[in-house]
Length: 614
Image 1 (tube, rainbow, N blue to C red):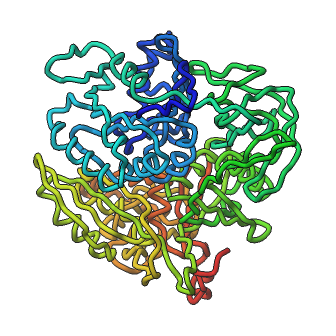
Image 2: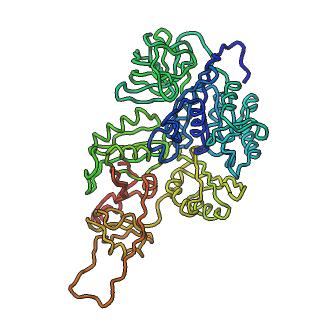
Image 3: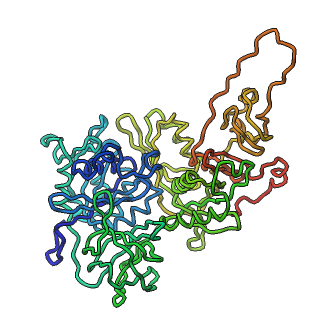
């Protein structure tokens, strides 16, 4: 980007965001930078995905929360913002890009641009950020860097990039091996330093604007000691700890405020400071009521920065107290008060999340997708909470008097021989194919499908392709609402009694379907113990044991063989259930159950209106 000579810039500072589709190697590339600059040493350097400190991030292999770190290279401080790649956490990407002057766009050299690539690049181009393109995983046998580079350029043109943005530098990298080069044929593949050199040469330093302070909050964190923490960039002036300040809300309201502490990002941690220069990124502690998009400014000049747009939630679920027979067997936090306090804490740190109370014991929780809410539920489960959750529901909006539902772009990548089952499964959910591309033995198909019909589809596609499908989706737009086709077609097997599941009973019921419980596992009346092979629900006795007599049989008893139980994750369970079913979540178990546990209650409420929330 050609620097405007009229604008003074800080030559000793760079703010860079790393953006990419999920699993294209952002966090791994940051690992290489931290190791080679010796920011991460000892135990931290020995582990993979250094920034993914959250246990769920490590288990799932995805970045859930945006992270801020800094490195020093050739006398320049480089603030690096590692962003999530999954569409359900895309709201964080939109906000943190406001803190950057340039972006590293990572693209898998084999897969090419994917749905989230388009989403994050569009946001960066609209903000006028200078891009650096990195073709990562260049060591893959199926890499096709020339074709992918052409696809990236076409994507830039399609997104109406400026001539300066189209003149982007290209690097080829293998983040796992820790190298990046500008020329694959001539340069030595020894270090990540060519990437850092390109950042210093290509991405401009932040402009130094004199005048009254302006700091806009782009990310919210939370501390039990200081409350909400506003993370943002100083856009104008200088932030000092003792100066009087006002909090300018996006609504225009001006509130006096006091800062308890200021932290800047140094290496993998934070450093408490008394002063922050224009252009740097910092964390402000102790400002009550701070929210995304709010501006900190002097009381005499309360000038707000342009508001940050936040996409509305698209999915909601009902969180209820656990009223199953196993209530309280393993959890510590059981009451609605506990759930309310935990949800209140969750929305303090995640503005893409919201909740409202529906009664004394139920809450409507809304988010950006099933995974977004599943991560919250899994976190609560590990903290000792017990609760039951309803089937996910789309949030319908009324636009120009017409009820509209969210529609998404679904991209499925499978081996060529498995395209048939994918097309059939998506077609049954009213998905419309937009394009198909085949290369190197795999086919990439892009569909347009409603969010409601997408619920539960991932499990069906994985099953139909024997785990070979790579599935991604992102929000596209709102369209007039269609009939809901996302209900499960197969019935379920429901436990008749309470007690331990017997091997003898499970063996005799195997021809009815498959089971979610193991022999010896405790189950209760109304619990869903398996899936029926037909469309109807069936009540079964899984506690029935073999009748014993004192007469010996002439031949040996036949051996009992019970197929292994299918264990669903929280995300899979939420997508599996129908309207009249719930997911019971406790620290030691994930169970499925009917809303009404007894068969008599289910018969009485056969005409219950499940569309009514709560």
